Each structure stands twice: as structure tokens, then as C-alpha cells.
Length: 226
Length: 229
Image (tube, rainbow over all chains, first blue to last red; front, side):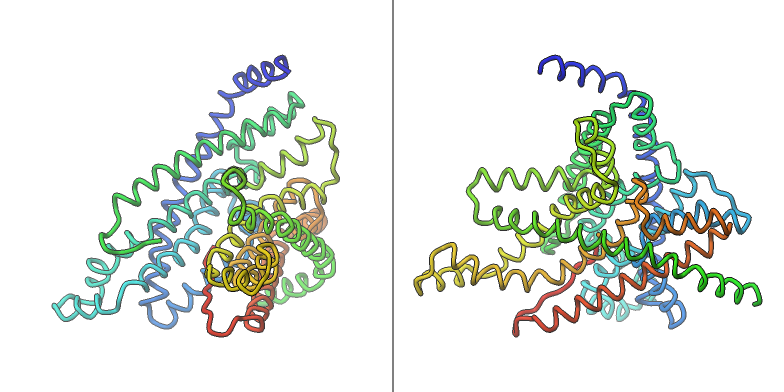
């Protein structure tokens, strides 16, 4: 028993540098994906709520389509489909764009929920003080909505982190990709993926802790967010 | 315009092959949800009614399973288990992987639903002479199950949209069927968009069906809202 444990730990130690290399790509995919997703989601949510009919319809359709189809299919369209139209993306690029576009749809729905949970009185009050509609949205509604959306946004970030693993299927060299290569070389798949699972677990636990702290820090006093 | 019609015709011609894959996708969805239910419901009940130790263990299980990406779980089951002497066919491995992951989410759904049933219900049941077990089985659980339909609908959508991950294990579901068609036709865009359309229809149809079930089984006077992801 001791021998097995020892061999597992020394094996884990040996493959750690390569896996951490992959983790770096995973974290970059997550970070860029969430930034694109948040910005895109903000525009989509605003367009859906405040836009004129065609814009609102467009935003709604975008959200429905991206939430109604699997992320992997979206990645395949970007990575295997676009070259047929003459646009060849690198795996990382396809993954970042796919994760961003997908996350945008989910972020939009979270933000829409937050915006709509803010009483309409806020808008009326802002307008009655002479702010234009767009200024009311920018200075009054959005700052509150962003704070309210933090819990769901945190969830989205964790989801995104876990779903970056799909980038492996389109050959992006992130954590899973590195693991698969090591597995193929050593035939110790169980141990490799166990280490990978532990790495994800640690990252998710740390991230959750940070996000919980952020949530407490940014809470609007008197507003219940859960 | 002509090329659009050509594409439409092509899309129509590959539909039978894609529908073969769609059946496998539906089977994956069904069996994974079933496994998730079979594990998730007892876990949800255990977390509410079990002693401190049991509920600690269950919540640990939930946290761990929910923190690991599905793809890693699938790899552990399919590529990992053989190294400890357990060889599973790809389809079964996919169902186990997706099902176990879903069980963690489903147990949360059921735990929440059970906790939302007022404790007066249990007291009333006990006071008319039911045992604690009977009260839980015949009073709390049936109400909780009805309440969990809206979040469960959400879980159905997630599982359906995660079945393409079985592609990575070589299961010939909708997405892989699509890849096979591309090898002989070289039209990846049309094929994947058609596949996406099928997924979209399945998501919408499943949601409508479950919304209908929810409407039919709704407890009058109880309001339930559906979550988002």
C-alpha cells in the first residue's frame, strides 16, 4: 500500500510541471472568455431590455440560440466549420471566441434578471432629475445591477472554468490536453486524470473563496442577493 | 440564393443519418438523468433527514463532483477505470460519467425542494399517526418532487447539452454522426448547423414538455419559478 501511494505521489510530482503549463492555458481561456462574455452579455442584456424592436429581437434570438445548443457544437462550428468559409482559427482562438460568445448569452440572462430586479422607481427617479435614458441606465441602473449580479456571475465564472476543458476536444493545449498526452505516454490514465481532477478542485475552491469575499465586499447594504 | 437552397437540400438529405445519432443522444440523456435521479434523490433526502455525519459526507460528495469538469469525470471513468481492471463500453462510461455529475446537481435540487416544504406538514402527518418514515415518503417527498420540476427542467437541458461530450469517448451520438458525414461530404458548416438545430429543437421540445408536466402537476396556490443555468 505504501509503495503504491509513494509511486502515485512521485508520479504526480513528475507530471505536475507539464500539467501546470496546461493550467496556465486553462486560466487564460477562462479569463479572456469571462471578459468577452461579460462585455457581450452587458450589451445583449441592455439591447434585450431597452433596445427597439429589431435590436431586442436580435438579442433575444442570440441568447436563445446560444443557450439552446451545446457549447461543443458551437466550438466545432468555429473550429471545423469556419475554414469552409475561408476563416481558419487556431484552437486557442476558436476556444476563446466560442467560450466568450457562449458565456455572453448566459451573462446576459443573469444581468437581465438583475436589472429587472431593480425597481422601476429608480429609473423614474433618475429621469425626473433630468438624466437622459441612457445616462440613467449608465449611472443609476447598471452600477446597481452589476453589484446584484455578482453571485450569478461567480457561478458563471466557475462554469466557464470547468467548460474550458472542452477546448481539449478541438486540440487546444490546455490542462486536459496535457493530461491526455501524458496518459498516452505512460498509460497511467487513472492517476493522471486524478491529479487533473485535484487541480481543478483546488482552483475551483480557491476561486469560490475569492468570489465569496468579493461578493461580501460589494454587497449593497439592505439588498438581499441570495 | 441557389447555394442556400442547395445547402437546404443537403441538410435534408443528411437528416436520416443525423437522426440515428439523435436517438443515441436521447438515450444518453435519458439514462444519465435516470442514474442522476436514482443517486441524487436518496442523497437529497439523506442530506435533509440524515444525521450530521451523513449530511457532511453527502455535501462533500456534492462539492467534489460539482467542482470537477464533466470531461475529466468522463476520462476518469473511460480511460481511468481500465487501469484498475474495470473496462466499460463507451456508452456505459458516458452514462455513468454524466449521471454521476448530474446526481450532484439533482441532489441539490431535491434537497432544496424538500427544505421548502414547511415542517408543519411533517408534524401534521406525525400527529395523525404516521411514522416518521411514512410521513417523509407519503407527505414530504411527493410535494417536494412536484416542486422540483422547474429546476429539474433546467437540469434536463444541461444534461442534454452535455451529451456531446460523449463524443470524446467515441460514442456515436449526434455530433460524431455529423463528423462521419463530413468525412464523406466535406461540408462541415452545414452539417454542424443542422446538428445545432436538432439540439435546439430537442431543448425547446423537452422544456415545453416538462413545463406542461409542471403545469399539470402544480400544487394549486404554490408558486414556483425556474432558474437559469
